[in-house]
Image (cartoon, rainbow, N blue to C red; front, top):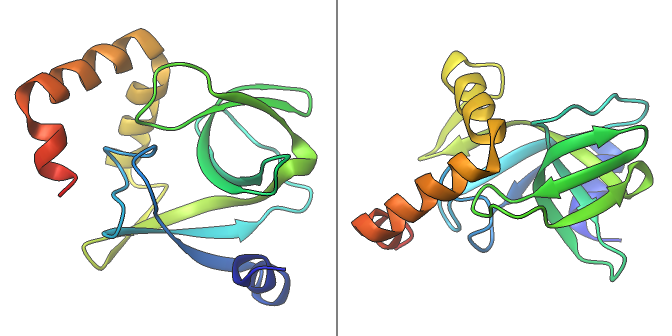
Length: 144
């Protein structure tokens, strides 16, 4: 069992470092961490960031785009195609908030709720925004 799973079992929460770019622009590799909580018996909703185990054993942190009776379509914030379908049993934890620049941001803050609603509202809008960021050069500058 990994450190994250051990923390979830012993303390009911863990702080997970971000690797890769799939959750950009909200979360940045090496600069952001997510606080996740064990989720026994929890109801998951569209917009929740969940930590789940893929069938190959990899732990992944992505956002729920669509929820249907124990099945969920998930996708990273830096993607515009639904990545995969997961089952409720694969979900280990759900995000409570995140650390950016050393500061904790609760997932209930008004600007985060606005971001979540806008970013999850329509994958076509997301694709346009990501294309704009890529063309403007902001994507490369912020990932350094």
